[in-house]
Image (cartoon, rainbow, N blue to C red; front, side):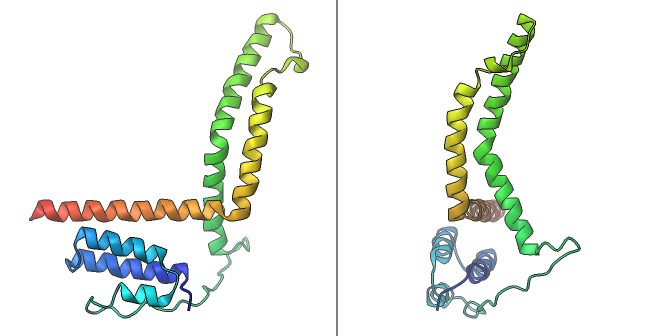
Length: 174
């Protein structure tokens, strides 16, 4: 049976606990954590925990209840929206910065000439084609779930970084 993200996260939490208890060294923890996030079935997740005492096989997740707030937006939808917004800012950020710089240069040059002619907006020659490419990337990314994948990748990196720091601290304390 296929495992859900919540199952992989529960297994990762059990592995973090085993690392904190000293039952796993950092290399073994890192290896198991990568395998946990790459697991597709419950059996693959269970294999990662079988030699650890006090850990039951991965809990089978049921769909999370969708709690809605006053606005009617589901709690999971809010985190998805924030992941999407962060991803969109990452994709469009460079374009927006260059657009601001080029438009500022154009504006100052128009001030220096003493006249504003919108027909002479030369930054469009840079921003137009680049914007079309970024728009295509945005549509493709939203269609394939890139914001959620990016958020998960960042979260995994953060967890791994924290585990390395914790292990390094424990080593320095001994």
